[in-house]
Length: 332
Image 1 (tube, rainbow, N blue to C red):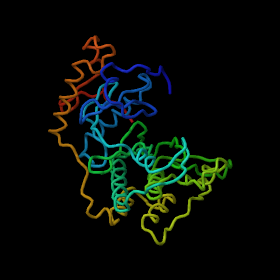
Image 2: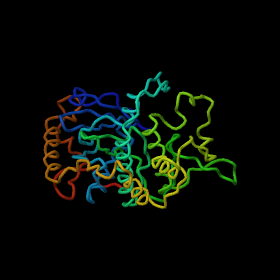
Image 3: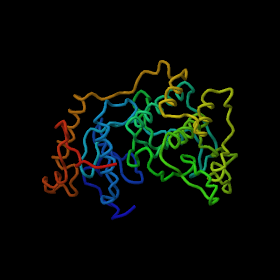
Image 4: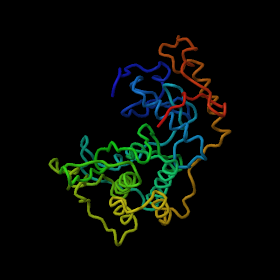
């Protein structure tokens, strides 16, 4: 992470309810229905990059399982309030000692997990249809709406299909063996990289812990990277359990496309009558954009509450539909 790390938030933001902190940003709940994502490093460019992805998303019919953005500025993103992430839910169902899982206390309902599987695959397939990959499929980046429908979020790592993969920590990416050097390589972003991460996410949902993260398997000397590189994965019941079969095929890169995987997940019994997550209408989004603009004009993003309102408009441009303000167009 380059540039100065922000240690002081705008006053009004800092007085709001803190929700989470990630690698690139803080998230605060500023109204009942709106949260603001504010960068930890104002010069790093991740917020601009993610905002540019939302610009692309908004050129297409929304996917119910992909987060929508109400309003964006050069250094903030205003989003719908959602329930805590899959990561939080997993940890609440565990007995832990810092980063170590001591015991899994509860596993989510099977019917619900099957619905989540279908929703997750539908979200990633929709992004794939735009020629993109999410690039960072992990439990912290999966949220839920008030009816427990899945919402995929955090798009600062989105890349184009075919670009070099930068990998990820295990179990969200697999290092492939290089027969020439004896080392490993991440390969290119494609359906195989995304479905590998999906396989690990579904494993978490069905087991309540990460692959090789069971208390009996939690050996500090265990080389998870090496095991994945060799294609050695946790034991599954691929022949007797349909979800395990999907996990096994995801880890093996069996599906030719994300569409194929989404169609397979849609056949799960929990997905048959799953309904749909909330997709916000253009009218509702327009109302929320106006609300965000009023908050900004009232000094929400000013550091000391006495800043020049004109500075709040610096670096912004009208969106194509004229309903809000978005960053100047970026590239992916």
